[in-house]
Length: 286
View 1 (tube, rainbow, N blue to C red):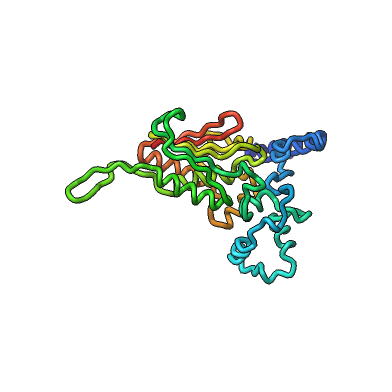
View 2: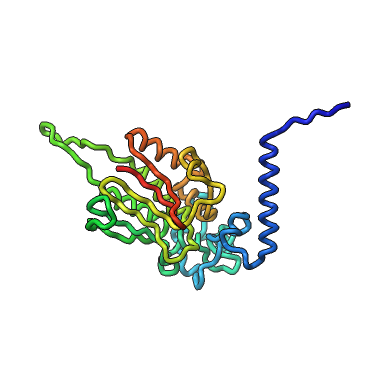
């Protein structure tokens, strides 16, 4: 009896993907300790944000914030017999009870004391070039959620809202992006930046005609510029993503950037995504 085989494109893609991953892991085994952090992350066997911060322990963690975090899941942290084990099992501490990078960035009392470049530099220029006079300049520190909330407030305070007087009323004559647009771009920058690149901060530059959100690190190999506006979910820092999802800053559905693009398009404004060297930049037209 003759057998008929049908070509299954999805199955072929899955098999090729499995072969690629197996090849990468084999190469990782050959390289051993010489393998780069980036290559290990691509293979899915290394999470940089789960590694230890030198000289950081539970003493640097804000236990009140941790307690509030667990309250949302009906866990009474203060009544735990061995709270350090709970912190270890949730990746706030390592197996050696050192604070992780993710744990420090989300729960530390003073993250920048141990990770100085984990902050946002904001600058507002009086024109369309970086050489123009500075209107405002700030360094925004704190935990990631604090940085996002503060940076959003700073952006709102610096955006001018042109208006005209009509009778007894002052009417705005230009649009202003909803808060969720800037919030989404700030969250992406903080959550997906490469924290292994030391000495480099997230930068938010405001000009008369645009805002630039610049974060250290490239997109993952599986993500292209073209995919971003259609929606893609990825995690450069999976532990940070887990914490920020539980804090309701992200939903991991890949719909944030499509939302930004749609709102900009509705107002006939442009959004551009660029990889420039070891950085990723989003430009939002004003």
